[in-house]
Amino acid sequence: MKIEKEKLLNDYFPIALEKLKDMIRIPSYRKDDSSGKPVPKEIADCLKYAIDLCQSFGWKTFIAPDNRYGYADWGTGDKLFGILCHLDVVPGGDLSKWFTDPFEPIEKDGKLIGRGSYDDKGPTLMNLYAAKYLMDNGFEPDYTVRFIFGTSEETTWECMEAYTERERLVDLGYVPDANFPVVYAEKYITDADITGKYVSTFTLKGGEVYNAVCDIVHYNGPKTEEIKAYLDQNNIECVAENDGLTIRGQSAHGSFPHKGVSAITWALEAINEAGIYHPLAKFSNEYLHNKFDLKEIVGDLTDETGPLTVCAGKVDIDKTEFKLTFNLRIPCTRDPKVDVNDKLQAFFEAKLNSQYQVVGNEDRVFFDLNSDTIKNIMKVYQEVTGDTTSKPIAIGGGTFAKSMPNLVAFGAEFDIDNTSMHTNNEFVLIDDLKKMMEIYVKSIAILTKN
Image (cartoon, rainbow, N blue to C red; front, top):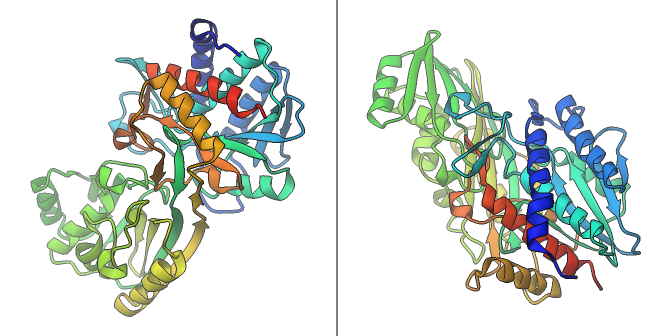
């Protein structure tokens, strides 16, 4: 089928852009990332918005009674082609760092700024309207194309656990929630809690999720002047307020902790420098602050898919107990239990008299580079972008490609080294959205034909 680029971008893109803005306006994040909680109203509202849109296209739709997931089917093929998207987002974080309300999108300097613009509402809408273009212009897929909408990708993944328990798995498909040109490997991911008891002279609290660098913490305790002076000397924002200190860093995606400024480790470093002892402050000083691979504990685990990375997402130190969370991205050829988690458990028990508990694991993805799927995706990507040098890549991020077999992560970030996902002022270039739509419309046309 010939794709008329001018028609696609003139007739379909403007509508998709406005629908994206509407979707961004729904603050679809979880305030409590514990398992077993009901889906928040805002996320359920966002799911309904997506399903209603698909119904307006004439597609068959379904929403799970518990709002864990929904899906929409186009076509009548015997095999199922899945496009897996997520409608939940991370919280806005430090609102003082945003140009706008995170959930009130604006266009500025060729960018669409708003939480979810890139992760994952922007790619979701570009895919939906790419499929609508094909449908409207007479394309008939050999597969039934199923858009699957998740509601807890950023937290518990209960959405995909529920889907895979209850519904049909896909025969082929992709997840538009990573990098271009295509991701052939995704690292293992472990979320873990470090907990212990210690009589502390201060409290330190901050962080909202496991998989983002913490950008704001609150300290109450002694030596506030010394702590503030140390942070000021290191150009870390620190404000005295409410008989304590508010310390601000810079958020970043959990797979790129080096791109952020951790309010947790800077606060612990300042506490340690002020001569206040706490086991977490000592640990951070020796192993965590401005260090991201824990190689002093577990060794250098780097392989073709990259190094081990660790992100400290949340901290809660009170007068008698403490908790710190880890989000670990583990190279694909390593054993998460033997090479990482067993070693960390032994270390924390011996050195900090504390417990290291794994609270979540995600398996790896390791896709065949010579498959027709990868070859066809690369062909379309090169045709649209003119980029013939980029190769299939490995990432630390974990996508829904891990939720079932036969899935690969495909887009939608063009410049992952400078990604704004999970950061303040998350944005997507308007021109990149257009490029996405063209790549996806051509890819769906190729991949859904036998």
